[in-house]
Length: 543
Image 1 (cartoon, rainbow, N blue to C red):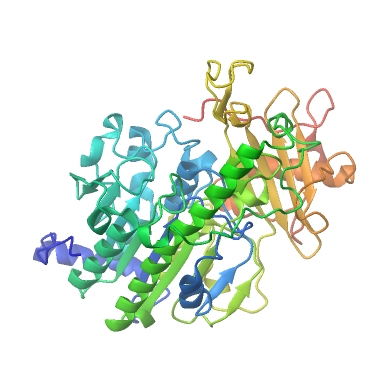
Image 2 (cartoon, helix red, strand yellow):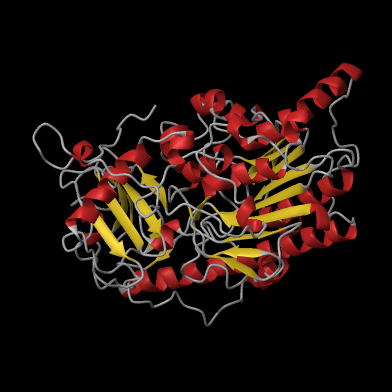
């Protein structure tokens, strides 16, 4: 299926513009010198977990990317929700610095404020303007992209040479794409409309018709495995004997946890379990088309001789849960199943069949890709760090021991019509009145991974000022909250570190963590005038 003609629109190249580009490109040659600059392909799925078998269906992807390069076993997102996480990928910043806090325009998702302040400083914008990369985007951008109050489908974010963006949230059929600023409506004919395949064909067309005089960056953002979990016809019978994992935290009461988790009904109803098992299978089915997409792209790059000069990144915007702590299906929670994601990378200089246990976050993707292009990272305001030393196998590497995870809950100011017995302030409620989110499901965590500790420390912004702490080594399913039994001195240090990270920006986000050798702890900063432990409060109005 051919979706793009050979006459792809190409911007003109006047002599003055070429001279300007040559001057700008000098800032992107620091690491690569006179060598040919690499191409980069970033594949982003939607709601694909790493903890509950999310990579299992992707045999081709694991063989073509993971086995040919490096798999990160400790990759996290700074927010377990689509729009804040995607904004972190694009900007290299934590949510408190890019100010996208949820999936709504009011939460800064693709808002005019986002477009004005953050879009000009995304890493694709830098690649295009400062490094001369031709840049291609296809798929889901941000959840409110294309909304009338956000400039409609005519808006093309700065930095993209070719723009094929989905209007709003993930769909598989009956959607609209912005084709370089012009709306194109798709229906429900599999052969021409199934979105994952459409993205594959658009990407293959780009690789055929692109300029060969400039390196390229491609970002392909699939709908899978996000709801409504519509698989391609040939895959709708797959995994019939597969069920959601019955791990230790499946369908149990979340004792000693935040009230939103405690309110979940245990045991779940049979209808809820049947629903989540069906969702689990259908999610896997949608990923089979993603596996095909990866195979097609790798074959095309190999056939054109560009594979050996191309870095390929594969990851997701957040994880997902299916029945853990009796929460049926969603994300938005602080636990490993929602914040841990796949990350696979292959490319020049990366040895095959490697696994890295280093603690990484999706705020590191932008700095890494700019580093590959030779851009001076000191010129950015990004919070993340380049993964290039890890990818290239640097020895005696000093690495971070913690990252920040933060989320600002969403809740309706009216009673949920499906759950009239519940007070206003909840959202994402199921028919049996188990709600997945609330306005005070607002938390921040320090996720620590070092030679001594595999630890998570979290604080909620609610009337309880609730604290959750987990020793992931002893309790990988995060069943037991040890906040009341852990060493008070360590608890205080983690509280202090959380305050530091929540107010960090750029280089200060990369200061030593509690378990780094260079960490310094000033006890005086822990107390206010009343002598009690001071906790970081969350902004209700981040904009």
